[in-house]
Length: 240
Image 1: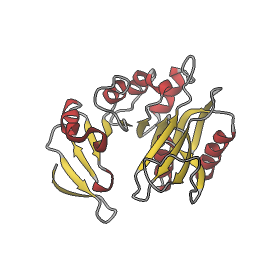
Image 2: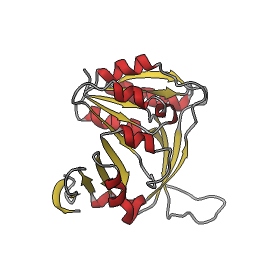
Image 3: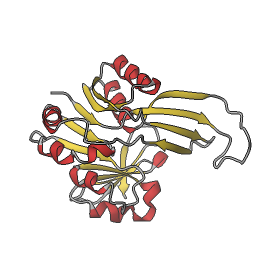
């Protein structure tokens, strides 16, 4: 049994620091450096878990292109097991603009999957049944396989997902939230609506992320708790 199965979310990030956001209108802007590296949500989860010493399997689609080669090489260096299908549409990619305060604007090219899901139900079920935890990314091809993944969970195994900048209403995200036991949402995006959105997802545990301010954890059956990170280590503080 592997510690973590990551489903979807592989890609590359093209990242650069910019003097301000939004950028001033200009023909060109000189920046301190433009970096191409493995990125996107599933890559981050898989690589972080591997760095913590967990055994990780990741399953997704990648293009047969230079961007896909960047992802394959990064995964291979860590010993992460990869179960991949070729995507004729190419590898997902993002352009991330980061200002001096650390704020980010991401331009995301999802390279939508065309046709039937790339992995048979039986193959995904076998992978899910051998995992101690499953994290699903909100990729298009994953959406139709959520019931298969949910049904294949071994007793006591949890499924998590990150809904990123979900506004609480967009129906695309709803199946991911309903399939999960642990849901991450953006407090920056939801603002004052975050407690209501978290309550609507009960009895799931909902983590409302707040960047440098930590996160609010809504356990579903208990009052929420604010976790702060003043020293880089999460510590429970006052109720949210």
